[in-house]
Length: 418
Image 1 (cartoon, rainbow, N blue to C red):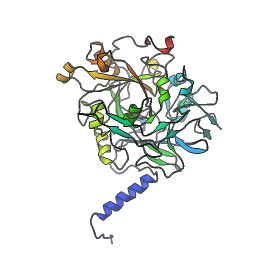
Image 2: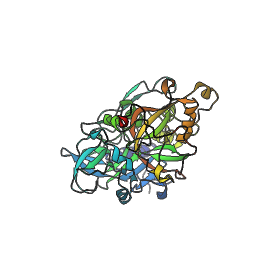
Image 3: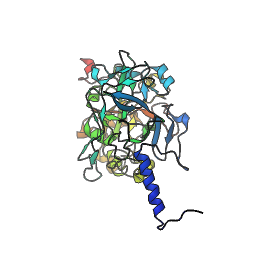
Image 4: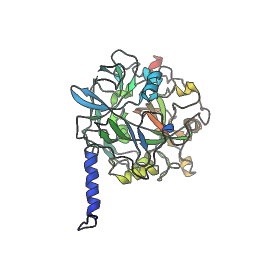
């Protein structure tokens, strides 16, 4: 005989409390009946255990390390060595070997009992403080640019998400996503990354809120972890890691000695629940509920993201490109280009979502899109770490149009030219 309750709402309350307890204990919520799961052959990080498209959560293998004897928990998404990338099931990003060019502190040197990161004990040189409360204050109107904010995580001295073991020249992208031995707070994120939706330190899994975006005309997914400025860290739901601003080089997406690739966003794209046609900062604040805290309890936020509420930025490189020289330009280190549509374009309704980096460059060449202030579109010298995760339908294969101007010419003040 089924149990009866004096109030019909009591079972729902009990179920909700049980979910809160599970999440507070750090137990990732398994896929439920009806959830859409990304097929494994559409992943670039092939070690990913599951990508839940309904909840916008990717479950990755979790690894334990220490900082000054305290447990830290990290994931591995990219490495600069091709053989290790295949062996570990992560993205091959050869330009990561350049991250420390002109900036030794941009890569932290760790100590490990094994030359392959994640296979032995690891002592980090720096850690992350996840205790601050993340705050985003939307601006007037559509909310962008924000009036202000506070990052929910701060990199400590010596911390970088890029690591090498001892004197090795192999560089891994291995961001810390939680600290301590639990219980882990994946509701308010007082000891976890603001995108960590679940963690199991016994099963060694981490559930991370991913981002929907575009590359070479295709719908793709990426993860995001760190940003070089405080306000960008707030907008990424990431860790403020200022040293990333010194990585090589601005405005040099295919510089042979650089490590950054271009990522394009818009300040005044269209607003609306889906993308296309919506895109950009106002869209993600207004339609993607960017000011709210992300957790599995916040079902309106998860629904908004599933509908298309992410900013839908455009990536200039992707590891699946047919041309091996172009594929080798992929890096999880992104050089932010902030696009502003002209008033004429807005009046004509042309400020719709763009899906190809070179198409944006064509718009910039005729003045339809500029950087803020009306100057030619270029780097904001804001750096974010966003390893690609996979693609929704077809793998990005090639640029849709040719670049408007030659790429690879560094700006006159680029450190590589001095």
